[in-house]
Image: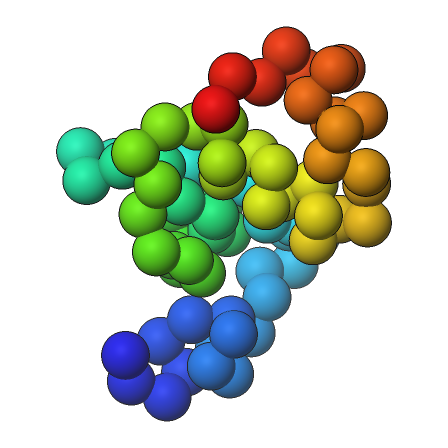
Length: 75
């Protein structure tokens, strides 16, 4: 990864955006969106959405167990 390639390495956070669980052919990941398009990938890939949603909950300061119950997350 190059300096400034991701928000974690110095790229600016797109205005008004928060992390999202995103999907690509390689798997699920956390990243930012800008103008409706993927802007960055801030994590490695996950094989399913569940672990990515749990990480997002943890980073958002939400108890992952509460998040799982609310979202019906399956890991």
